[in-house]
Image 1 (cartoon, rainbow, N blue to C red):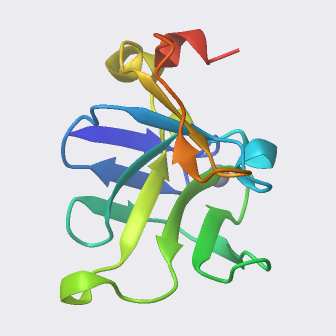
Image 2: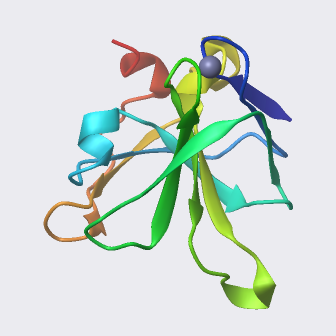
Length: 131
Ligand SMILES: [Zn+2]
């Protein structure tokens, strides 16, 4: 299991298993947040606690981004509507994790700005993206 917390500790998430990749996306919101995403379903393999402020992105309206009501860290996102089997697609921001458990996970570069396709892997790992 992997765990993440915001800077002040109010918001926590857990992800049931270590992800096989971390997604960096260049869409208009992800490039601003600088998040690294790992995916799952809220209430299934992703659990969250703590008070957040949600932001429903205005361009598509499909996703609520959650950030800590106190310290402002972007902790996770949740789909606005149910998907298959009544589950809510969600993602956690891996930057809320301690670096050590995820440092060797490969980064998947997703071109959410133009083609909406994954770019070829370039060998970078999470530890190459921390700064
Ligand atoms: Zn916080």
